[in-house]
Length: 85
Image (cartoon, rainbow, N blue to C red):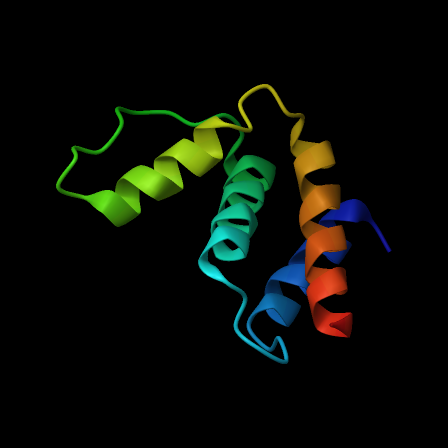
């Protein structure tokens, strides 16, 4: 199975986790997904009134420079870990 196929499977699996991850883990899932699918963050940081958008932007921006394949593998590994929890 190719890395892209594993990534696609992990995306599907993320919707059926046994329990909802905590907010920090959800941010990590989001950031790894965005880095793996779109690459480095673009655009401006949301304003202070958009706390959720700002947290998502910051989590994604923290991965800047991470190769897309590396982010995909980390995403796959994290989803697998959460599935087995």
